[in-house]
Length: 143
Image 1 (cartoon, rainbow, N blue to C red):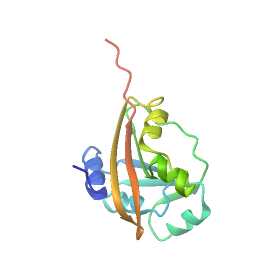
Image 2: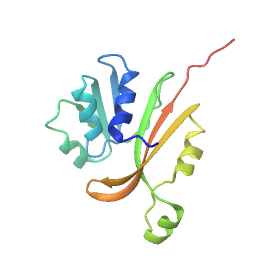
Image 3: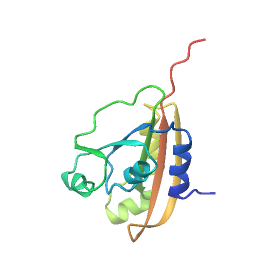
């Protein structure tokens, strides 16, 4: 069974302590950043686009224009939402959204625990497919 986006975000917040810090990288229209801010979390949002920054000016969120190059700390979680498409659709449309298998191949190099939820339906009033990706960097444990 596929989760909807709100269920996934609620599940993520369950594991966070009150007033946790969340870094929202490449936040696009800011829907997720606003959701977490409304739940009482401290949000820092970074995007490479000044247009994206301008869209969040009315929300109490620390926003910056920055090219994302930082690493996730041990024990942290990286949450990604991305449009996706089948390989056939890539060829047909010429768009270059990564497929689930491509994301896994890239992220397996950096993370020990990856969870991907697939969605399809209307997003921003257009039919599309998208992925919600959670990546956890587990602390090194020595026995």
